[in-house]
Amino acid sequence: MKINRINTKKNLLAFSGGVDSSALFFALLENSIPFDIAIVNYNLREQAKEEVAYAKELAKKFNKRIFIKEVNFENSSNFEKQARDFRYKFFNEIIEENCYETLITAHHLNDRLEWFFMQLSRGAGILELISFEEKTTFKNYEIVRPLINTSRDEILTYLEKNSIKYFIDESNLDEKYRRNYFRKNFSNKFLQEFKTGVKKSFEYLEKDINSLNIKNEAIYKEKELEIFRNLKDDNLNIRVIDLSLKRRGFLLTKDQRDEILKQKELVVSHKISIAITEDYIFIAPYKISKMEKEFKEKCRIKKIPKNIRVYLYEEKIEGVFKIV
Image (cartoon, rainbow, N blue to C red; front, side):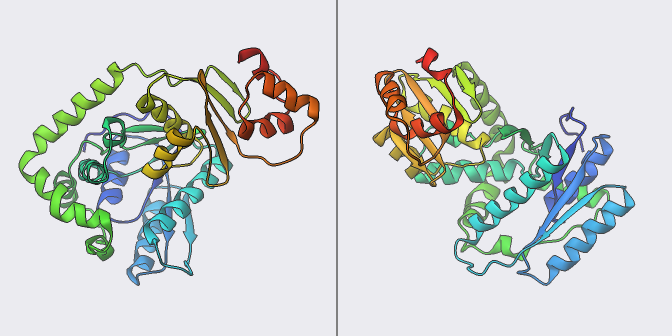
């Protein structure tokens, strides 16, 4: 299976033993791309033990390092979000401890269209509709999705042609999960008939986004503080904020995006402070502590947002006063 070249040397594959990640495992081997694997067992299905055993078997056979995490959630409500948060926290820890440069995931064209339809149903702009991209900068590494333009049917054909073993996770058929509902009733059926057009549409949309020339580079950055220009457009500003938070490991909901634009100063998940002023966008970790009166007055004169000041004070960041 042909996939786009991944040029980094230290790569981690998010593996599950399912259709997509099993195909990607062998596609990476075929394309001589170095990688190790990580797998999470949520202990919800008996078959999960077999999937972990398969991962171990592949790792041993092809000389790959393997990282395994076991978890039992006490509260199964909103399982998808819990599982995703736990999974990426695990990946982050591995990447930081072992200096991986890239996290490779097996998301494919059906996933991409499924995301598009889900965002469309919630009410979204073009930036949200196509934010499921081949490459995403995330903290100190990149997430790469080599199969993003490959359909599930093409993946299954590859598996069958090469007699590759894989598992079927029956929870992916349960329509109580919103993504499964969209997958079964919309994205899979749509792609069966219009796959070529969908691929072209995503390609054109990506070019359109690039043509917007969104200036999403910080004009000032020190430690975990970032300052951007206010682009005088809510859609562009929220895109800049969204990208910054993704790099920090946070995914904004639509409600959070709306609240940021409405309030202008907001703390997300009690962890990240965001402030939009007339000229700038400030993003920094949320901190609470007392500040010296002189420092507070200095911030007031320079119109530094209140929810940003404590971080500047604690981290002794003075350069910002020369920028704003």
